[in-house]
Image 1 (cartoon, rainbow over the protein chains, first blue to last red):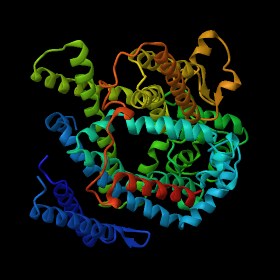
Image 2: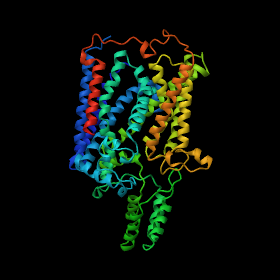
Image 3: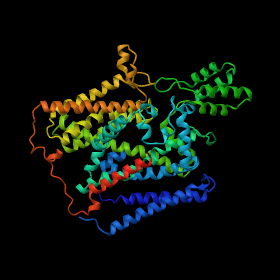
Image 4: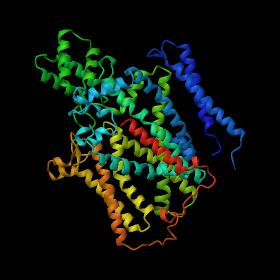
Length: 67
Length: 493
């Protein structure tokens, strides 16, 4: 298993986060639930999560794993 | 899913399972948060559930009445005995039947779990896996139990315009029911209710769909007073069905709270939760079949390509079988009942065999085989003799009494399907354990201590963690997590 699991997780959630932020920003009226733009808020959360994963993956690549 | 498991095998299944775990958590968390906010917070939810617990009949949930904390407290309703909780179980059934037999039986012996431990890259990783997994697992009730509590609280709040979904009824049946309401005579309430019930048809298992008589009567009267549109009548009938399809609750909460965008994420999370479980079980199934049955007994000594082909073939067969099982599972109003029933049949006796085999070197193969066989036979007999109240003897149990032409004795009726499952598991475990013990003592040992080294706990050299700091040792971390679990149980006592 050569692929660091953080790569696909990071890429996937960054993409989903960007999509949700984009949709939430453009379509603010439809995204309102209980008084908040939930698409935007959760999109930001997912983007942060995906970015953290990618950060971990990049740092993992720099320090090669113990043989 | 079939394609990616066939192409990628175990590796693809494991990678996607990890991805799907994050998907599930991040897809459901906003739904749970929004539902909690809508209800008005944790204390508002518990206050509502206190009211529901004292009168569940108002929501057609249960015919008895319970103490206020029956739906919000983890241990008190259980310690109160059979009558104090809606499931009708006591401490022994839950702690031994569920907590020991069913849960240890699944998490320690199910090949799905064992296979992932075997796929770890070294012993340290394998030992740390359950410990790492325990941390999110302890917090998972927030994602799986809390939505259920919120759904009940929301159903009890009339201004939220939500109800726990009824079983899926065909649109034609609804149309006929609407006609029945329009043609009903407000003076003859009973006939009107019966007409609506007949129009709605039967459930999958042949029973009629229950409707709330008072609400239907009120609907007929309201329609007679002011002519309602077909849509309004249909909505009224929908609200008055007194049956629940609990499997649809999370889906209905997703529909209610997610705007387009988040809806896609939550639906993907739903699909992911189904898919990751299925992929994992299919990979475990094809491994066990190909290695342990096919290669070992049926067609040994063939080439690797042949067994690889068989693994792929049986994957397709396994998926076909599970699709067939889905039709059978529709008879239950929630998936947990049938899952625990199946586990009670097969996992409970297997766990007894594992337990004795791993920790007692005196276990013999004859003892293990007879014990396991009789354990599964025991659970079959138990299932054939008992049933949950309200169920028709047949697929759900007690069919032996039907064959003999008797009524099911009251003593063999359980308050709920889950109570039946817990006692079935307890019974199967005890039968297998007892018989394995007795027959092993009565038969000769065929393996010496040397041959059992590494297989039995007492004969295996213990792993000592030399180079690992104290706070990273599995034993220490495991104990800390156990303490955290106890604290969580006290918080929700």
